Image (tube, rainbow, N blue to C red; front, side, top):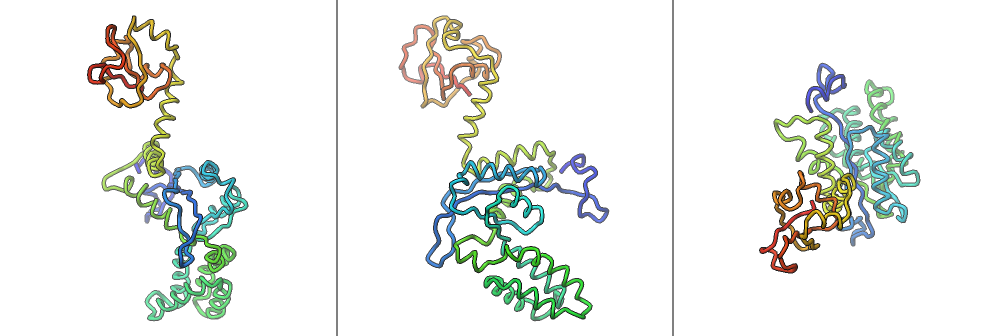
Amino acid sequence: MRCRELAGRKGKQPNGTAKTRQVYLGCVFTQHRTDEKGHPVRDHESTTYVSSFKSIDQFGPLLRQEAIRRGMGGAGQVVLLIDGAAGLEHMGQDCFHNSAQIVDFYHALEHAGEVLDALIGKNHPKRKARLRRWAKRLLKNQVAALIKETRQTSAGTPQAQAVAEALGYFENNVERMQYGSFRKNGYFIGSGVVEAGCKTIIGARCKQSGIFWCRPGAEKVLALRCIHSSRRLDEFWKHRLNHHAKRNDALSLSAWCRILSGTQLERRDDVIACAPGHFRQYFGVREPRDFCSLPRADVWIAHPPGTTVGAPVRERQKLSSV
């Protein structure tokens, strides 16, 4: 980000300043079946995305709005898959009150590694084996037992305080870490979909070498990338065209015909070529966008006086309403 976008913000640099800005990315997808092993299968091309630089309190309603647009009201079960942060938990309670909240399994494993680091150290020869044991027991709904056993093991040792702090993540999310029950119900327990979206939508464009963003520019680019990844470009451009058409001073089609002094207009949906320079010749307007005052159509063909309507396209003047 540019320096002016980071002024006064706290960060992770040694001097306490920030070099980056946080952006939220959420996705909505549907799931109707599981495979032969009982693993959930995401519906093909069902994922849509939303992003925002705003706070979590403002991002939550945006995600809810997208979920409602996608048909959340008719869903048999709404599942909110998050990383365990307190802000996301509160967002889920406010915006997805009746949803099943699940803490991403792989984030849970990362925090399990932090517990083991505090308990036995990063370089302990049995660390990997014990982490695999944690993973297996988490998948069997044994998070409460793991917390109890780890506390007992660390009691009276110099590491007790550090272990207790690391276990706080699990103590705050016991109900949302019942992975055995979630898998039995056919729910996703990993947030790989949105993690991949962070790389392809945000990282691939906004984290390139030598790029420094201002917030308005980054917001617009990310919004367009979310629209593209959600396969909604056609819908976006139609909405934008209609929006700009409403802003213009509308003139009826009959008024345009009088201005054209006999030039005939024909609607064509199969022509995409345009020649903006000819607007001044035929319409006497300054900007091509003024042509949006005409009733909406994909393409309008202007026929100078004496031209036969229906002649081959190459013999006529092509004008676009975009």
